[in-house]
Image (cartoon, rainbow over all chains, first blue to last red; front, side):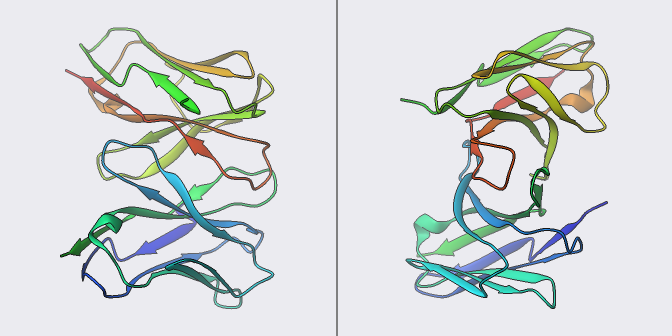
Length: 111
Length: 113
């Protein structure tokens, strides 16, 4: 059972544009929502994470927006750069449980 | 200083063979994991250990057997390898089991021919 659905599967953005990746979850017990970034040949690395007591978290050019009632959260990458080209995974967990990952989004930022 | 290191990085082997992948973390974390990433890049947890004790065992064929000799090491042994086992296997660790950042190794690309 896929508990975290991620879209789009792939995304092409021009340099300087905004990249938006969306995730939806089913389990209302989830209380931790991280985003991971994975470059080719590397393991995923934590980019930014949010807990449901806030609706938005910003770190540099990366922002998570969280909508608890809709059970959705999204990653916004402002001023996208070619170096941001990677695969992005949303994930969710609740205390003591394993991370459930979305299917991943292949982001390509064209120069 | 690599935080989570796994060896080998690449592994090519024939069907029916037995192979092991080793993982070590120097972060002092209590919890370690094995994930499988398939050709579509989907990440799925296989096992989790907390202080050398198995706490998560997903629906994985029993040909896969994890072993944690101490909390800094988690190895994965695979018996009777099959073509469908070809994937990238990631080891990861986190400070605890509760909603904390997971640090991933570089992955082991296993190809079964």
